[in-house]
Length: 212
Image (cartoon, rainbow, N blue to C red; front, side, top):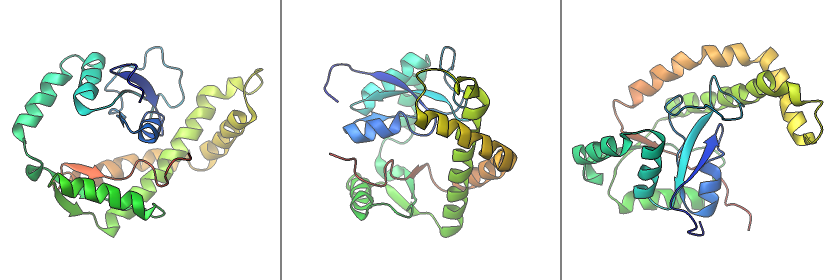
């Protein structure tokens, strides 16, 4: 955000690349799970959600960051741009999430309209599936934190907030973890169907403006 670096890297389980990027007015990418190696990364949800991704002030630098993480990415990106060089060729599925500040929704809609993307409003049935997937994702995140990091519960320096999160994960693991894992294939099927109709899904990173 201050221009000190062209690219930065972070880990993202439930938003730790995307949310800081959104708060700072830059771009952040949560990569596809297992696209980038997690070797050396402190585990939170290594079997389900942990990823490594770049942050940058614009798309060219974001692509440069991805190319550093995965050799050949820049060439594949260039090829994808060549296949659909105009925003008018790209179908954006627009998803509206309950509780989002109207000003944020408007800003996103205005940005998409200004570039002349083809907008497809996603229906309530898909929104219900999305909301369900969000709940399951949060279950996986905290339950995996308990599975991987409960050994730190009695360690000095671990904050009360971190301990509370790990202990919540124990409850989620016992009560909801299996259902969350089983729901994955159904969500993947739903997304495959949606991506026959759209190229991307647009949804706000933050539902509220960050504090000043």
